[in-house]
Length: 483
Ligand code: AMP
Image 1 (cartoon, rainbow, N blue to C red):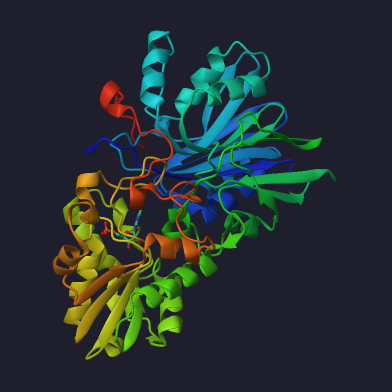
Image 2: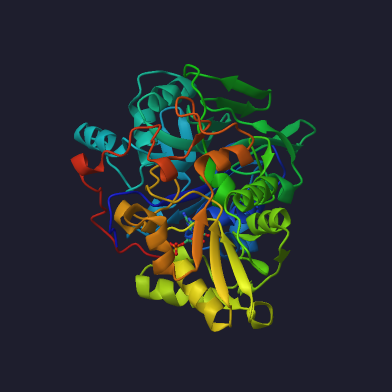
């Protein structure tokens, strides 16, 4: 059900050029990026002459574990996409990569992020006769490229990019090139890596995170820069920067929660960043306690940093069942409550009779924290204190992280004291925004020049927010195409 006015997209992208079995490499890369999207997945390969595509709902392993499917994706070039979307339109035509036939040949594209003027553009394009096949904002790119009057693919792409606003990391595949693009502020990540080529020449990889390079044994080359287009072909990598220089605003929530801890983002290992955030949190919000317990898995590195800095022992007082998906995937509140119980259990031997500090990365709706605290109390905790490794989430994200509408964010409606009462803890505290910046190696949040996009914590949106209210939600008329 679409129950609010914001998009729900979180995605991972991958691309490979001139590597043996590119689709298999893409499937491995997407498997490493599974945390960025579990709802659907797709790969488009190119064998030098033709494109081949396979998409499906569900996990990468469920869709690309079959030899017959992989045999249908031949060639040394491929792009892939993992999608997480909780809108009602869970249909195959909303699964990426998108593919279109243009005058210049085939064009496949996968997108991580969200276009904030997609509705206005879509309405204008529909009036011009463009026939949309999906409800995805990313399809706007395809139509803008199709109607562009420029002749080369790259000029058409630049023409399209100059008309969109929002956050986007794109991978695209044409007959001639693998293309990677990051939006001018570099909100979402994209990296370039290298692999031995299929024919003695270099092979190249693009991915949302470095963990996708590690799984395929690729060497990290560099981050794609904010506002940069990289064009990969057999001659190597060319870089085009069509936008004027702007101060980058990388998403700070990638460090706090979203990225995998073994990834390195913008030169900073995510695991180290999380530990430093935890240490800073301990410094800012000290508490007398017997044991520091992470809410697994997302709270683990921050809790380690906290415990180390506070000199309190770190223990696994909550055990996570790994065979249940993320809480957010469950669509109704009722199931979400159930999901939390399915996912976590209290380790009574660690908790009973203790003053416990629970460390988690964020409180969004507050459902997880409420249930966890209840569970820890039932296991005999004497006191429960909660420490959060991000500032209060007071605003929705419109740039590619799934957060509910503002009214459902616990911190948007309640003070920290009220939140503590609702969650049922003796004390609750969050890291400060300046403390977060400090932990990430920045002197503090400079309001004039913030180093990150931190809109979910500050409401300072660096890119205009969506134009939904004006244009209304696009909807598929035919919703039956499930499976
Ligand atoms: P909630 O019950 O809504 O407060 O959920 C908060 C928990 O969900 C946190 O412990 C996070 O680990 C996790 N979380 C935070 N943001 C997201 C997100 N965008 N998608 C999925 N899970 C999230």
